[in-house]
Length: 545
Image (cartoon, rainbow, N blue to C red):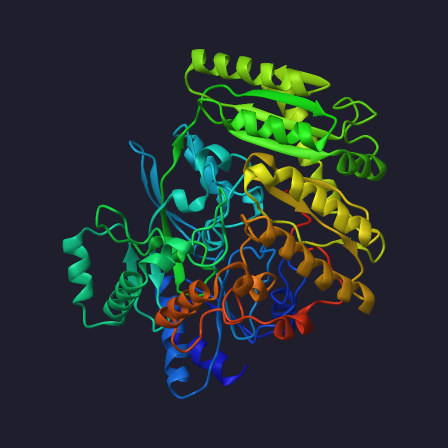
């Protein structure tokens, strides 16, 4: 073991490893990048996390930087679960439920808990967290918080930021703080602390006060956003103050989250599913806009295109058998309602059916839950594509999380089709139509220099198209190393400078996940692209997206 590992082994309760196999395992996540850590720490408790951070801080004071990366299950698609220094692997031990309030559905859990396990627990109370990502069965709550994850039902219920009520966070110097909404009196008490926590509150409060107009400009005109730092929600109109929104979506660059307190929702009424076959992108645009105007939002408003369905059929001829008939329509729109009030549910379904019947070749309304599960295979067919390689060609999570204002959805889709056509690549498209959030993954061979160059050329053009449409580069997968280099083009320079100042306030020595989200350059990330790509971390699950 190296000296860092020796010190940590002497001072933490959890395990410390430097073996080649362990380090190689943690050298990849679900992104296109690879970085081998020096030391793996499996923290047994929060104190282990605190001691690790304190040790790194003390080294940094002597001009020796040892980066710290917090990691859940390694499903991150942006390269944020990778680091060259100390890797803190949370799921091994920090995976417990700490508290459940059965009356109001608030639950406190450790960051390494599996999201699916939490969801199963909440179901026993007839509740759930709607923002749980598609990967909930093989990802952690801490990872979802780090990325500000969302789901197919976020159109109605919102993203993770809507459900995180408070956090326990280990700061970069090893101090532990608890976040939550503070009154003016409570904020003044924090401002008076002679600790690093006090310094942070004073600096953030001053930054927001002196840059009110810039903070307003930091909010993008999209329904959900996982880029940058959420400056706008720290201070509320009622005078309250909450650091929680800053940490949610920060990808471990501001602090190390050890515990999460989440709100939840009661299970709605029996869902009704509607599928509509649309023959044009204009019909899709009209359908989405009209459905969004309903008195109550659909709980899901998803889309797949015929390219995806045809590709799935070529890869697995039986997957869609008896689910949807050939020839496939240009688009299939999947609409779900889950209103708790039966009369409202019937009204919404009737109104939606009327809207879709004017635009669609075929509309199907399904109330039977077993038959709904079969119809959901249309949307879940994206997993067949995401998990399938063709020799050295792999579907890369490269340009698959852009989001635009909903009224620009058709323009966005056409732009994606044009880009793939110019690159002579097969296209397959799916996503959250109700949010203007699309997923698309080009098949490329990362062992070929030409394809690596093509990957970044496509990334550059795709990001430009999203910016030109007034969108965000990421709705739910966050910046990481993949989109971090483009953050300064997405936001005005003065807003991006605020993000950099926030990073400096919380992490003055740049210990916490450096090279992620903020101060990232293409020159730094291009050499990190791995020569081959696979989802071997999660092939015991279906890689849903």
